[in-house]
Image 1 (tube, rainbow, N blue to C red):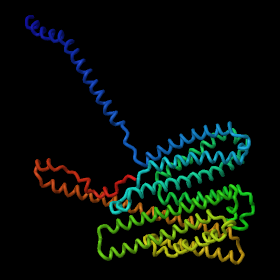
Image 2 (image 1 turned 180 degrees about the vertical axis):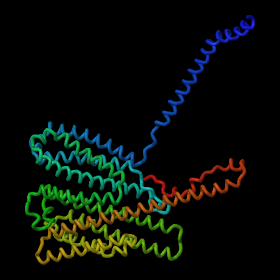
Image 3 (image 1 turned 90 degrees about the horizontal axis):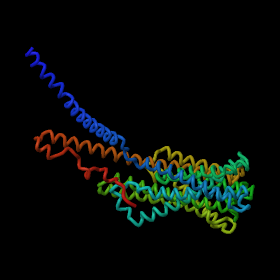
Image 4 (image 1 turned 90 degrees about the vertical axis):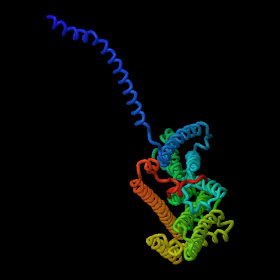
Length: 463
């Protein structure tokens, strides 16, 4: 009995003290669980942090925002116009002009904003000295003005034609009731495309936009012309008046010439950059002679293509009736530099593909055959001019895409060279560290010096 009581007393003591110990463990467990929850929340927050967006994703996001803002503003502006405009402006033709103008103004503003927010193109170290600050600023201003006008004019032409077609399909009453929403939708699409085009501006983008601009401008001018038989003579008759359609046609030609000159600038700069990067540090007499020859080729190419753009500007600036001599000089003389460019293209641009040379010769042959048919009386001069313009724009698009491909290949080659250089530097340091002691390895971390990386040659510079 005594031993049983002696054995039972410790158990009783443990049972009496157990609730106190359990209480302390519960508080400690709660604190531990709370700490674990906070740690998990912190980890979850860190995991939920979004990675920073790149330049292309930012451009897409801003373009969507620009589209939504344009949609809202143009919806309100169109509603106010329909309520406050006089009766003469509510006629279908003038109403379409006003709606197309609202769309063009919104796309113009968004194009300017998108172009202003676009950083300068990365420039290799070899050609940074060629890009002085005043010239860069002047170039940006001229490009922004010319290209925004071209894009907004394209938006005006296309929206006018589309609004007229929608009005015909839906009927006047239904179209008038839905007009603010339709105009807002067109303005949103135009602003989105304008912001995207301005954010990724290149010779390829300009050349792609050029034929659409010219075709839409000529189409609207033909639809609004009061001379239904203009096509029996030539395209110059479409602009040989003081009406709105004639002024529209002439303005289209002037802006198309400016676009060709800007394409010339982009192409010549990319060719110069590629030439100087490929030369590198080679200062031998043969390399210097080759450089002078390449520069002469680029200058001749730029002069010939720029003269083609000047020819279009002259045709639009001088109408046939008051200035017949100047009009014919620009209209007929424009074919001379373009023909020389197509024939001399293999010598001027040896880095292009052989298919483009064959395509150029085919254009010359087709245009010459059509010209002979006109001289024989088998076709009209309007068809000859139309074919010449279409083949010219087709060549400009193909040429610009070749230049864009050369630029992409150059950038890709630099990225691959930088990656291989970084891998070699890391492997060399790893081999060196393998033979070091622990204290030496601690003092020499396994990192590559970023300042020696060739990627730094292509960092963007401020305009």
